[in-house]
Length: 338
Image (cartoon, rainbow, N blue to C red; front, top):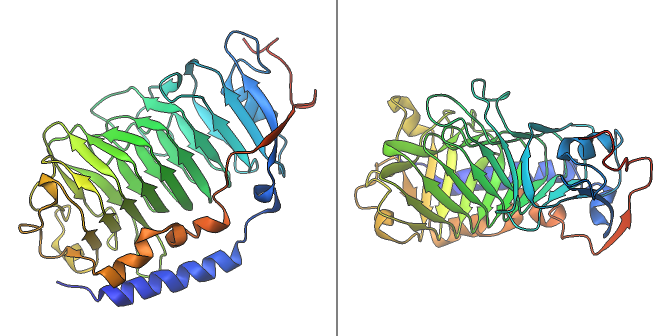
């Protein structure tokens, strides 16, 4: 069953514009000076653990805090609380700053790294859940508004990235898993990301959870690359109104010809919004796609080809250009933080 693409896009634009007006960027995001806090396992920084550095940020924080993570393997289960916005956690290279844990079970409790705060930035980190197959095992949960990730590696098997709620931006990230490994109900743009699936049959890359036509949520993958081990589908509907767009994306032959799955519920075929636009590669052939997915026209695609779809120009911030050292109020060196 076909959709009226233009009406869906119009509703999405209108509701998102209203949402942007109602939640303007906070003042701290406009500054270029950040408080520098160093995490170093060797004891040469302000803290040995990433969580200790986060815990030291005051509640209702109003300034940019830049937590620089020196190379190492950090065996931590990390939470950025909702009352601590404007935090950046940054490594220098994703392959050298590794945050790892191995919980499983509840999708909201298993994550290695949980972001509840708004205006969070993650840079050049590996965030992984090493539990493996057999259970839900989230590496990264993002439940705060205006969160951005640059050059990160997000690794697990099932439900790797719980892209839960809020507006999010992922740039040049590597995300791998096998089952529904990008899931949730955020409004997110994935730009120049590499998605790698371990699925051995028909596992879904995405499981987007939009549950009503009034929700301004959905995943857009722009200029991305999809590779894998055997075969997979692009997505299946966690929510009845699931919305996913792949644009200008390379798809290897790992993508099955049908492209999408209705998760055993044919009624969702008339409510989902699954679209592709000028994708390429052996997996991008749409001749045998399910009839309830469609291509976007050039006009319809315009909205999905910029950061406007998440209001990103108002909140995605560049790296601070100036830093000041942490005072004793936030810096406690490494003593007592072994």
